[in-house]
Every structure is written in C-alpha cells, then in structure tokens.
Length: 281
Ligand SMILES: NC(=O)c1ccc[n+]([C@@H]2O[C@H](COP(=O)([O-])OP(=O)(O)OC[C@H]3O[C@@H](n4cnc5c(N)ncnc54)[C@H](OP(=O)(O)O)[C@@H]3O)[C@@H](O)[C@H]2O)c1
Image 1 (spheres, rainbow, N blue to C red):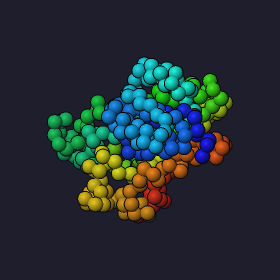
Image 2 (cartoon, rainbow, N blue to C red):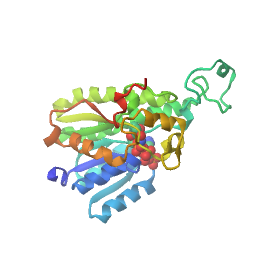
Image 3 (cartoon, protein in one colour):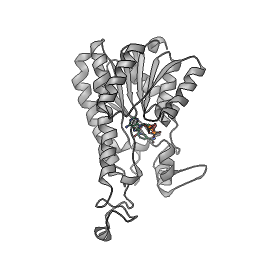
Image 4 (cartoon, rainbow, N blue to C red):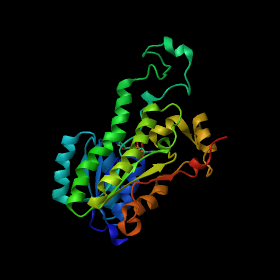
C-alpha cells in the first residue's frame, strides 16, 4: 500500500470514466496525482473527490497532443510534485463521425457524397479520422516522451497505455479507432523494449466494454435498453455485463507497482469479462 506514497503519478484522460477512477485510487494509495485532460471542469470534479479524503492532486488542463504546451505544464508539475514515476496514458477515444453506418460495403455508397447521413468508408470525415488516429497514438507518444524522460533521469518508472478489444481484432464500423488501438499495442511493445535499459516498464490495459457517456449513445444501457450493438456486446461477453471502472483498479495497481510486476513489460492485459474467449460462432 505504501509503495505509491509520495510518488508522482500523471494520469491523462483523468476527467474520464475509467481514468478518473484510477486517479482517485492512486491518490487513496498516497500518490501525488496530476490530473490531465482538456476540460478543466471534469478535472475539478475528480480533484474534489481526492480533496475530500485528504489526498494530493493537481490539475493540468491540456491537450495531450500539444507537445509544446505539455512541456510547459510538465515543468510546472515537476516544480510542485517532483519527477513523474507513473504515467497512465488514458486520454483517447473514438468519434461518432468516423463510425460507418453499415458493417460492410454497399454498392450504393459509391454514389454518395459527404453530405449524406449514410457514412461508408468512402465518404466518412477524413479530418475526424485523423483526429482519432492522433489522440489515440500521438496522444500516448507525447506524454511518454515528456514524462518518460523524467523517469529515465530518476531511476525508472512505469507507463500504462490504453488499448482496446480492437487491438486484437477490429470491431465493425470503427476503422480509425481500430487502427489506432492496434497501434497502441505495437507502441507498447516497442517502447517496452526500448526503455528497458532506463528501468522503465511499459504495458497496456485493454478494457472490454465499459459504458461511458459516448458509448452509451451506441450501446445503450441495461437500464434504458440496449441497442442491437450493445446486445451483441453482452452476448459476446461471457460475464454478461459491461465493465465498471473499478474493475480496472487491480490491474492498474499491479502494472504500476515494481514490487509486484518488476519483470513484466510490453504486455497488454485484457480486462474484458472474457470477451476475447468467445468467437461469437
Ligand atoms: N470505455 C470503454 O469501453 C473503453 C474500451 C476500450 C478502451 N478504452 C480506452 O480507455 C481510455 C479511457 O476511456 P474512457 O471510457 O474513460 O473514456 P472517456 O470517459 O471519454 O474519457 C477519456 C478522457 O480523455 C480526455 N481526452 C480526450 N482527448 C484528449 C486530448 N486530446 N487531450 C487531453 N485529454 C483528452 C477526455 O477529456 P476532455 O475531452 O476534457 O479532454 C476524457 O475525459 C481511452 O483511451 C479509451 O479509448 C475505453
């Protein structure tokens, strides 16, 4: 429990569903937690929770793909909390604009331009496509460069990236997200090998399906009714439920803690209610 005490943990996407829970948990374990995300209000809500139990945290509102600004805030973080020991690269996600309407190509889509409701591979929004690639890939590379440097200067540390079920096999309708989360797995392995001599371990968590504000629009909820896609997810999840943010805490703690996972690097751990065990046939 004392392992995290007084050490600095940087959590990106800390205002979000999954990483807010990880940030609060690390603060409960005594870490000094830096909350990074673009929307200050979301970060304040998490900081308030941490303040309530006397934990230590600070807010750094920033776009993680903005390297210049991230360098500036890293300096401020260092002055206040000292060098980073743990980095959780949670900022990321999909964008509805890059979801195709259909699972497979339809001949008729060739006649459509970008203004129609039907979105196929040939007329989805390329700007949004690039944004999704950027946040999920470069959005982990930049913090890893900035805070990994601090770790390398101070005897090492541990980094967790966020992969997805898409890292193993792409889901239908989400081309940019699938491509980017597959890249996260490759980045995790590459960085693990590269940074091993610096005493830095790099691993990833691949959450199964966890309801968040955005995914609820596409999946529905058991309470309000599941969409056909949401029902399909549950049918393919042997534990027959969506994940809850707290389901990730044990895995995150294990991967960050050198006393528990010192010889573990480059892996992606599925936390998915068994989703990967079921082919669906
Ligand atoms: N929920 C799931 O089922 C699931 C499954 C597999 C993988 N994941 C991955 O797990 C991670 C966390 O997911 P989540 O469910 O907690 O999503 P979430 O609730 O949408 O939280 C993601 C957070 O990332 C922040 N963010 C997005 N772009 C950013 C940027 N450019 N710079 C800084 N912050 C940024 C967002 O805050 P701002 O908009 O305020 O910046 C948001 O609070 C993501 O990488 C996601 O892809 C989630």
